[in-house]
Length: 246
Ligand SMILES: [Zn+2]
Image (cartoon, rainbow, N blue to C red; front, side, top):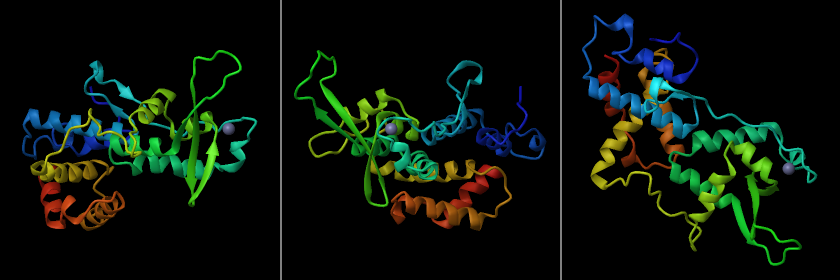
């Protein structure tokens, strides 16, 4: 059963998918089911990475996974809510969820913002042998915040922070994300194709022309620190989008 189209990205993505788009049924080429499923999986994977809502293709009945949202500021005694405006918090949240292009990058971000300190003395017996100190970098200034402020601003759980910190090695870098797929050099092209598909999928409609879409794609890639060999050239972007749209 098709859901009513909403502003939700995935549904919009469905609209541009020739297989699920009912209006395009007769006029378009059939996309093999396997490939369509792969797209759906990739779309969900991408959505999860970016913290936007999606329907999980893994779970039964296309379970809807809600988008990540900025959670309320703390109300602690240290008053970190006075140091970070809602606007800044929103920006931090967005940079974290849309700026990080991989789980590894995200893990690194958290690891960089959290310092683990060993508790030297404890007054009462505590199960915790260490403390976490959380901070955000705002305009090159490091602002220490409490746990609630940190977790709620990034919309992550404490468990995730622990994982990120535990992966930190002596050089301060997190271990290679083992859950993530190792990308050998010859897979670079695949990842470029994927980046284009992902980008096209992120558009609600075809209101924009391809030149604009490509421009935004390129900007996004550059912002993510990709070198020229790591993202598609315009002709290639167009080629892939033509394959996908028509
Ligand atoms: Zn606080």
